[in-house]
Image (cartoon, rainbow, N blue to C red; front, side):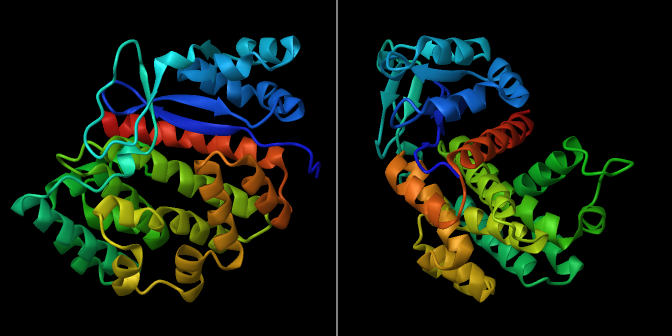
Length: 327
């Protein structure tokens, strides 16, 4: 591992409709080897030609001409810094001209005040989450799904649209549970909690952010040599870590009734164990703290290149999820 290398961050930006609109490549210094590794990937070319992949002019100016040229050839577009508006507003952000993209933590603000119907939906969502994590009877899970039409619709549509290995469309929850198995069902239901948020302007970006975090956690767990069960636990740790933002409730309070494993709870609440260290690394990444992230990657014996390529793969997966939910 080359400890002098620095990771490249795939930083998600919103568009004028407050949905995932672009990825901004960020790095703390002209990390030539990592950028060249990225630009040489066929997957990067596929990603960057199908979704805006931006490089701020202020960072592009510090790159060697051959590195900048290879990134542009792969589909990366240099953009004026003034086109990116940073917002940490607690209300719906409004883009000033000439901005086209929104950066910042605005979508992590407290959720909009819920009406009676939305409060009931939240109660059902948390009940469903509890049942799935308790490995409850299929009929009990179906009963709760039937009470939340939005969540039910989103789940079945996503499962069908992504294929999931089914030979025919899934038209019932019992079919979904049978075909997917409980592990995958748990994953998709948790994702849908972030998607099926009627009246919440944060929902598209929250779904994208949690998809990115969870999938990156899973891929890095694999790079660490963890087995498939632990990789799935890493995915869930990434997802559960953002439940507090989704519901506007302290995380420790939310996860109490979910009967999570000690390892998962320790990872989410105390960054303990390998999953907790991965989560800490991704929180440094969210802050674009290259020094903090690199230190944690060294602890995990992961390279900047491994992190960057995992981020690319997770971004591709996130985009697939976001597009299917948007249909």
